[in-house]
Amino acid sequence: MFYGDIPGDDALSRLSVPTLFIAGNRDNWITPEKVNGLREAARKFSLPVEVLSYDADHGFFNNTRPEVYNPEAARDSWRRVLTHFREYLQT
Image (cartoon, rainbow, N blue to C red; front, top):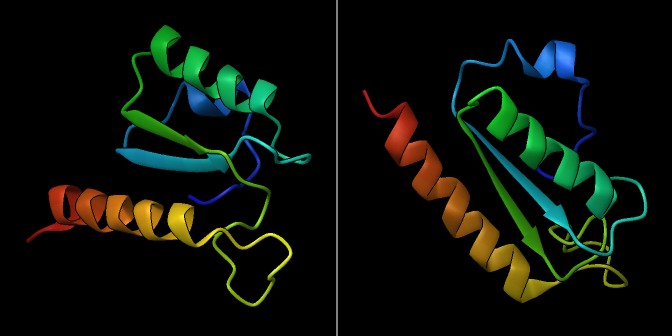
């Protein structure tokens, strides 16, 4: 999931599928504090969650928004998404 809102502990505690959460450290909507809360919940509930943070703004993957697009973070995060899919979605 790219820079999506983070649910509360009640929903997170029921998470059972491996999840990759990707965020930008300069995101004013999904703040670093919220992302750290997700990391804490993942530890507390032993969730199958991997959290990646980049030195980037909200929307850093969106190449149609040059004011926030970060090509290095976009490339690396996409590589990590594909690795995650190969690991967990192979038939």
